[in-house]
Length: 325
Image 1: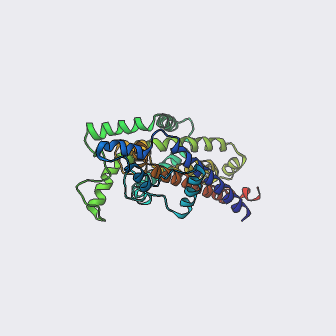
Image 2: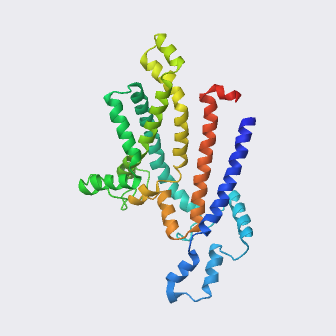
Image 3: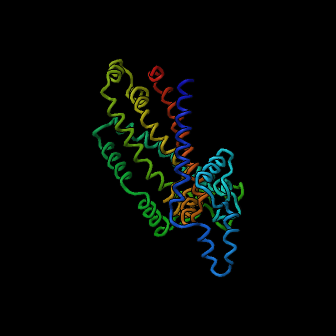
């Protein structure tokens, strides 16, 4: 319990520090969203409407410290304000709608990539020096070296434009009404194949390299030699002796990946025009939509901290030696 309380206090302080940066960062960006809206309207709005716009969106002139305290209070009450780009929708509604798409896409891609990457890393390390190891290692390093935007464009160009096997964008057929039906679910699955392939290609290499390196470092340990000397099968030694202990650092990589799930994949979602949190954040940055930017960054921060807290607890479960640390 003392360990959990110490970690909770640490992560709460980290969250407040991140929220403070989140408050000041958008305000350091050039441009005022209300001024941009007012300028784009041209002569259609009289000058006295500028103050009314500020009052509508909550941009009231006042000391910065007073705005900061109001901002902190709104975080813990769940009132993130109203979106400027999608007015009059509240920020929670804008992000909540995109959250469903991001969890479906990023969550599935992360789970699939972690499972396949971990398995490939285990087998490659166990067969170190074989053709399988060479192919997997080179492929994983190449996948992690190519930027996500390049992978997205290559996959889209080959399978979307050249071959025409899959749609070039959107999360579903725009002509269909959203409904819990096989036809609509099939359309969502069909439209999500290319973004899923892109994300898995980007993520799987990191999990593979991490697991392979961890496994190789453990194969010379005494308990591995003892397990083999006892006559245990290679599969049993590989999975229950080597892989289990090598999994600890990989869990940290999984926590980072989980923490980025609710942040969405900005590049992939923008390339495929996927209505997830990453695309929403990109549109909000272009529109200087401070409430949406702050709300999105808060979600990413909270998710990352929660994921790391779960990893701290899982370390105790995976390695009993840490209980006395």
